[in-house]
Picture 1 (cartoon, helix red, strand yellow):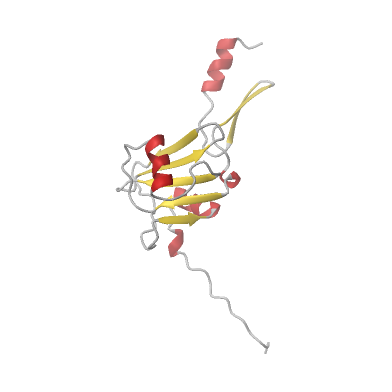
Picture 2: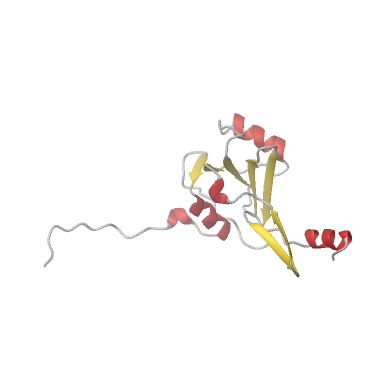
Length: 153
């Protein structure tokens, strides 16, 4: 039998995994935590293209969503913000009982940021957000041009 202290230690030692459920097995006991809703559970993903003052936290960013982005901060959406140097990113969302924020800082690389768009708010798909987090400039990817033929040789 595990002591309450050991259970607390095990719970605190579960690695923080954004967007997924993390588990740790100790004998027959499995402890799990859900740190953030899966990306696919959000109805939409919005990226604010302009740099943000990263001293802003939940209150400042949620006000920005409503006042500058003209969107509902309480909707089932992710709101993505980046700093001027593109080394840090914040993702804000409403989680039924309060706002939550996810923050990541890169040590050496830069986050790719869509500068070619004219709109200040860019609507992203789940795949495009994952590409940004992985460092892929998805807007520069050019697929094959579809070819339509009427006859075969």
